[in-house]
Length: 104
Image 1 (cartoon, helix red, strand yellow):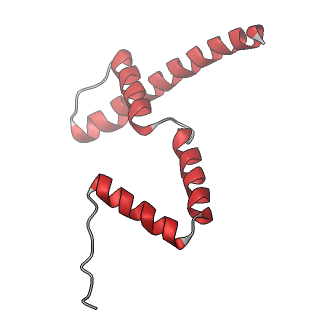
Image 2: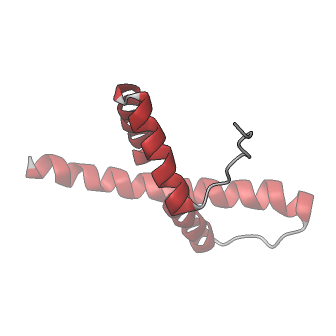
Image 3: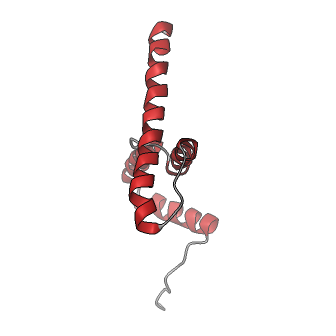
């Protein structure tokens, strides 16, 4: 198992290096001529790639997809009363806007 992991490390390093190079090339050949922004160095492109990974959670779906699927399953199992209780809790935490209720 450990040797499998050790064989995987060079592939990860090569993949990150390749993605950094691709980001640099795309930026320098597409955005610089069309917008006049400054060209990126390789290390800046790699930093931009890492920043995108941090902000957007990955390059192949990431954990966000699993979270949404779990939340959808939970939502489907809730009764209408539980759903309303959940909505009220979210409104209290997030300060969600409430539509005006018509007088009864």
